[in-house]
Length: 119
Ligand code: 5GP
Ligand code: ZN
Image (cartoon, rainbow, N blue to C red; front, side, top):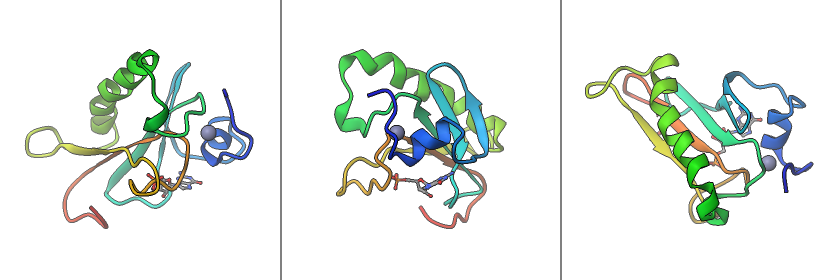
């Protein structure tokens, strides 16, 4: 399904719930986490409602590749320090045992000077 009316991230992507946007194109949306773990903490999500990594197919390789190659560029733009002394962490929680709370696939990107609130 393209959009799930009960999904909080679909509502964010559609602008029905406000967010602090860091990136947008035809298939991706990026925004700051409301409860950041680190000085820099944003998420990249596909605009299409995909519940988690568990539903990915080989047709999504390009989509996920775009997210992973965009992350370093946005991390620097958002204030992460350069590799290797700086850097960032990428996390994709998947399913209950993976710690996933929002069931719209999202890639966390966290960085900035230590210590962090979590992680
Ligand atoms: P998960 O635990 O599913 O990997 O992560 C969900 C993340 O979404 C959490 O880090 C949480 O802080 C964030 N989050 C939940 N609701 C909202 C919201 O309404 N707006 C924003 N910006 N982030 C949210
Ligand atoms: Zn959704």
